[in-house]
Length: 119
Length: 401
Image (tube, rainbow over all chains, first blue to last red):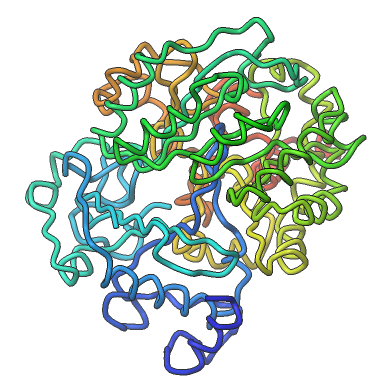
């Protein structure tokens, strides 16, 4: 999907295009559109730097429509991909996220605001 | 897709399954429990007793496969040299075993110069065989023929490219731009997804437009901007002369916004973890910190989402940080390692002015390698514009003047 396609997809039906400040990206939870609403964080691409962790920042400057369309496309992809589970299944902390970890960002298994996935 | 359950839900890696802007076909997605259930997933043990959960494994691990490199870059964080040693292949494979078993998604090979190894392509295959996504960084020196074939086996290759001619020489101490440019062009022509690593110094910062335009014209698909860090050969007073000026650091947000607009169509722009504190000077970003979290912008993730295995086989919080005593072949014990835990704690409980900063959940106090070098401890990043303003305000009026 090109960014132009993303914009079109959003305009065609997603409620991601916020009616307010166009610079403000919609929080998926606010949008209530099923799986997309359960997405707490997205890191696009994988990078290939071997010395520090990198993050795409173009997303910070996109319109709400494009940002929403990316989330919708990701949600659709997750629904159709086969699943392989890795790791020991004991989560909750550091490397990954947020709230429920021993570092005091929050507690409990269901991330609330402020206990979002910690990217 | 690959799923790793966490107490709060799951990390999901989509590999080649999306077609997002800038050609990014992969994504790492954090979904909550409801979302995971909606996909028919059950977190099992990870969801039953999150209270006793230990720190999760990193999302990516950087593995130095050699300390050999003839480039002699002035600021090499590993102090790699032409007479450096390759890491034993069997030790590397045991490290990959342990890293994969822990649930890590991506392994980034570095060094030294990884392409000095004849078995680099085999290492990529070894990582893939274990379910890891292999990526690699190279200076580009000598990349052709068999080395090009080896690099084709990686999901992405980043070439160190700080600009053409003088810009590169100023950062690295030698003019490696020609070799890097050839490598980028050949890799792209071979169908490899290639990006560039651009180290930001006070000299290279002003040439970013030209550097990115050049990289893109050569076939690069993305650029990762890296903060110059005081590690290895750069851990000297020379660091102070090469790091970004305070005005440059404060201008990073607007600069990124401009660069993204100018180069963003089909070309991704990334920043490294150590640059995130500089975004605190950008009012629109500081006022919408949820955006950084939502789009996964990572600040200091040393010993968190990130870890490194150095060429001596020891695990480090990140490639720039001192090694711990933990052997990479026992990577699964990362959660219990006290030295790694200390780095996580420092990031989780920052002092002021980080504690009240809106960007704290993403930034996590800035670069600890920088604060350790400049201030002698893991405190707030002393080069962060917000930290500088805070410290200035604490000075007596006459000193402030």
